[in-house]
Image (tube, rainbow, N blue to C red; front, side):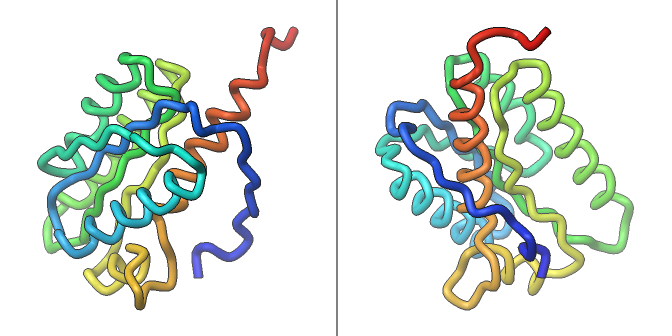
Length: 161
């Protein structure tokens, strides 16, 4: 299981954070699971009113993340799923989304939770979507990682020299 060895994070004093969740629209069942997991995590953290934005697909996540990161959000969470097919399209979309979201985080300093599933088949996606029969809950994990990073960054007052 890919979640083996994950840290147990304790996150406090984050209810005032502005968090945006961006979700692709492909693969309804998987995306609904990822969004439910994200909402569960936000509720557990006391973040009551996140912004939720839907975009057509995973390829569109970076531009939406960049837009929201520039609007004063403390953390942005990107949710999507790309399932391998018979063409190189999978590789291009996965690389573009990964590099784009990384660039947003580095350029803006806003943590970006990476909740993009890159799977060989639909069953792998369902197993990670946070559904009742899923082994993992990547929507929840992406929110937790982004918010934990935002809280950690909040504690940094001066550059390290």
